[in-house]
Amino acid sequence: EVQLLESGGGLVQPGGSLRLSCAGSGFPFDNYVMGWVRQAPGKGLEWVSVISASGVLSYSADSVKGRFIISRDNSKNTVYLQMNSLTAEDTALYYCAKAPQNRGWQFDYWGQGSLVTVSS
Amino acid sequence: QSALTQPASVSGSPGQSITISCTGTSSDVGSSDFVCWFQQHPGKAPQLIIYDVSERPSGVSNRFSGSKSGNTASLTISGLQAEDEADYYCSSYTTSNTRVFGTGTEVTVL
Image (cartoon, rainbow over all chains, first blue to last red; front, top):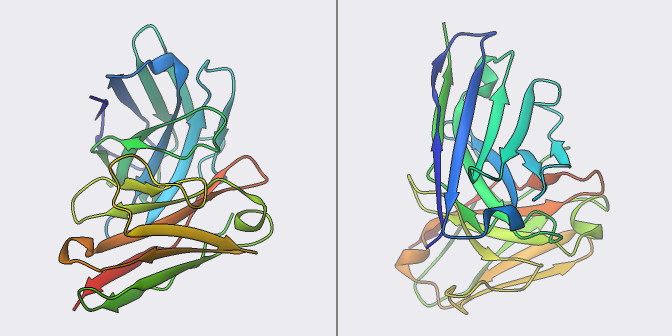
């Protein structure tokens, strides 16, 4: 059974940093693209970032480019999202998701999310 | 990258068919074979119900079907059931090597 378990969310002050982690199990982790999608309270889904199966390539939305860094450790079956210079607009539930390679990052399994709240 | 445009809400009676539109541009929906749809129940994570424009993942009801014409993708739910009441999001790969989601549609079963 595929499982994605996010951790690392919490309350952070504006301008602060936070690192989210997502541990995957039940599938060959190093064969899949991994990514992050967020959802602000009461709002829609927003694509954040993806990283290739090998970790060599990554892409991010303009809204987080230069502030968020996605990475992965295939030896630990874990993907990370380092979030810097956080603002109130980054407050959201952050979902980790997996996607088959070469299929345009269509996420087929999602975690339950990790809540990030940016507030003073 | 602007969000794809979906109707805010769509409703139908049990047994009816409804269609949700998803309008983008030639830089996303119009040029991508990688359009997908997600269903999200309140408090739950999104679930993939359509990928590659019209393919259904294993286990997804054949009452869900997808299509695309030009810059607009569509999701049709036939034989509407109470359990279909949820939010639905389309998503497309873009020519900028990013993905974009739709604005979301709330489906109500009357």
